[in-house]
Length: 408
Image 1 (spheres, rainbow, N blue to C red):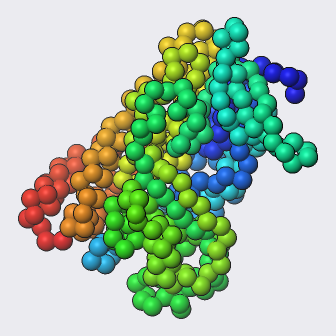
Image 2: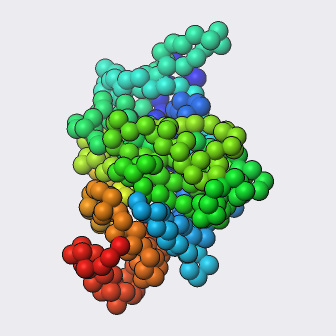
């Protein structure tokens, strides 16, 4: 590339949000640079709902497992099975493969890909944004290089350097810290190694643990990925050893003897930022904007949705020159998903606060109405409204649990 080339859009970060934004804008004829740091894989269970598959044209070969239900463990080791009804499913992806496919799709649509680490955003004399990044040279050293950008999408993760430099208040985002290990699942699914048949691994089921030994304030998981599995946990307690907890969970699940493929850790934001744009030429997407669902920690669908909305906002900005259009990304996202985030946030703050409440929460999940509405809302990413009496029943049951009228 020539010295200080100019792009319509520089997308910083090549995860699901950034890759989606780059793909959408390149398809619409914009000149796009996708700047991403190679070798970084986010710790993630890898769950995606059917709506994501449909909305973003995900090919079947990227879905390495189709989960037909979940099993939840309470603090007192009560087990609750939550099967998905009516042939529904949760797709599982390997983030190493999935994210790279999204980046390559963006490239095939016309976006330029560049391996580099974002450093700073400065301004030319005419006010145009200049994206400065570090890149390895052929000799193995690093040097700073720059490109000009008419607009910038910051999709560089929870600790977004773009957000901290450009968006007031972005540095005060609360986080849960997540860690997981990808392991090769033995041919026998490690069932013989499990001390208790109740802990056996199932490649069509997600196991979720609300147990203090594995996470004192969030949850731990065992998620199938076809020939591999993700075993992880999250916590906001800085003194809690995530790696030790995952080791204990592997032993508990009979998977401690399995080969470890890789280990990954990262902070996960707990709520969307109040502002996603700088009112000039920068807008955020994905974890940088804080769009990870509370309580569940789900982020891929919301990241890709945020990336698409950021692309729409940038396209309007490039067309009109009106920087106010950048704010539409957050407005549209919160209009569709804000209520769900608020409900999940309230649920996490209340039900995850101690083991007594988590015991009651797991007890509630044993209810068929709760299970059906939970799965339908998850798969379609909308609050289910077609069963008013089920909502009434759930409200009454919730109140009974809140008042302590039901024994967990």
